[in-house]
Amino acid sequence: MTQKGRHTSQMFINLIPLMGLIAIAGCTQKDTTRAMQSTDRGAKPIVVVSILPQAFFVNQIGADTVETMVLVGPGKDPHTYEPTPKQMQDLSRASAWILSNTDFELSLKPKVASLYPSLLMVDGTEGVQFRMMEAHHHEGEDAEDTHTEGTEAAAMVLDRHTWLGRDNAKILAAHVRDTLKKLLPQQAPFYDANYTKLVAEIDQVFNQLDQDLAGLRGTKVFVFHPSFGYFFDEFGIQQ
Image 1 (tube, rainbow, N blue to C red):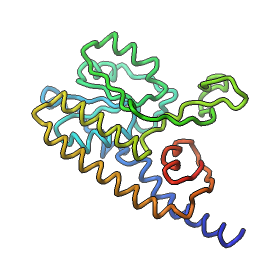
Image 2 (spheres, rainbow, N blue to C red):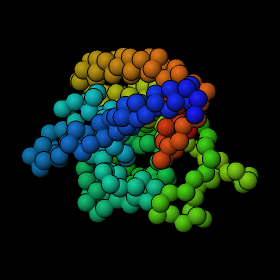
Image 3 (cartoon, rainbow, N blue to C red):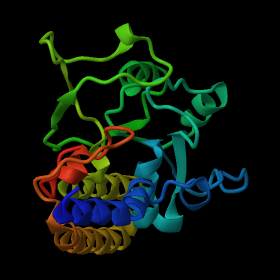
Image 4 (cartoon, rainbow, N blue to C red):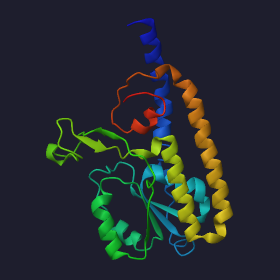
């Protein structure tokens, strides 16, 4: 391996923990899924999110003014997820559901809309410029279950792992802010301030990463799951 190759490899190895932290930011159940205590259920609106990364945004902007419920919790696969009876019951008490455009929502959304017509459903990815990626197979799925958006030899699918992109994160944050303002208009200044702070932090992190990852621009990296596409696109890196 050349000296340049060794340097590039070492840079990526050093950044693995950082990317892991970004990927799971706010994704531990302790930090992002506030327990819905029976004494509080009537006091705060319940905001449902589909996946763990979304909970980070709700918690950063909403803080203690709302309760957060995550459908696909730790150890669950969004590609094979089905809601439990308890989750369906909890959805009946929720004020809003912020969607992530994840596969399982395609079949669940119409069912929930029919059962709970008063539930505010918000597409947290509306406004995102979706990228395409090669179709891939998930553990637990049959090969024929792989979702595709075409019939070409190398079938392409929408990359639904949107939350790691700079602009995508800001779009999700704006949807969260606007949703919370609809639920609790009196808290609008609080949500606006938290949104502005979060966007500034997002820019600060990506500006720093743009410098830190400059040496990897134009290179390819191997990943265990193709969830870093939007993130790597920011820095000219191919997963």
